[in-house]
Amino acid sequence: MKDDGARQEGELDKHLDKSEVSAVLTEAAESFRRQGKDRSKAELAAKLFMLAGKYGSLITLLNELITPTDVDDDDKRYVEFQSKQEQ
Image 1 (tube, rainbow, N blue to C red):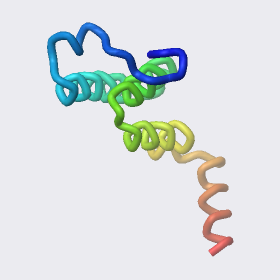
Image 2 (cartoon, one colour):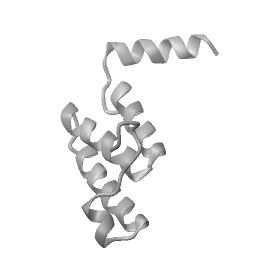
Image 3 (cartoon, rainbow, N blue to C red):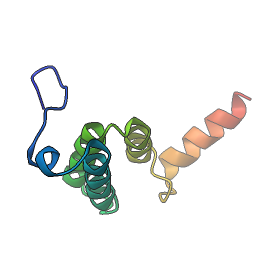
C-alpha cells in the first residue's frame, strides 16, 4: 500500500490481470475471515478485502466483529430489546 492508502502493484500484478489478483486477495481474505474469533486474522482479512477492492465484504466483516451472529449473550439481548422498543 502507498502512504495515502492506495494499492500499489506487487508481485501478483506482474503475473496476473487485475481481476485475477482481486480474486486471489479475496479468497485469502475469506480464508482468514473463516478463522473465527482470532482478531489478528480478522485484521488481515480486512486489509486483504481493502486491497481487493471488496468494500462490501469489508463492511460485512466489520459488522460481524461488532455484532457476532453466533453469540447469544446479555449484550446482544439488550440491543435487540432496545431496537424493538424504538419501533
